[in-house]
Length: 130
Image (cartoon, rainbow, N blue to C red):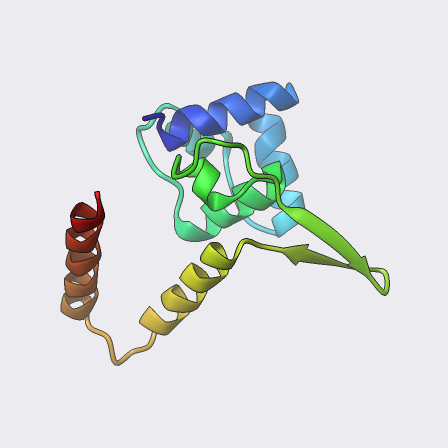
């Protein structure tokens, strides 16, 4: 199984850009603050991107988050539709559902203990379906 870091490095090298160029382009495109060293840590598996950065990386490279996380082996490119001069990104249903779940879990009614319980349940279920 490949790591997210190796996948990110492979995508960057395929684009033939440096860590610095990637940081600058990501910062401009998504109005965020990435540094060359942050990206380097991700690519060398010394750190992992947070959800928001992972989502932005998927959009930047035009791949699914599943691909970055090595959940699917094929490079699934996302499609874009142009509607009334506005770019509308069509994202896979699974990613959309995960985003809804994450927003739901950000509700103040959930404690860290609740979220850990849900995470443990998901891991248990994942083992069951293997």
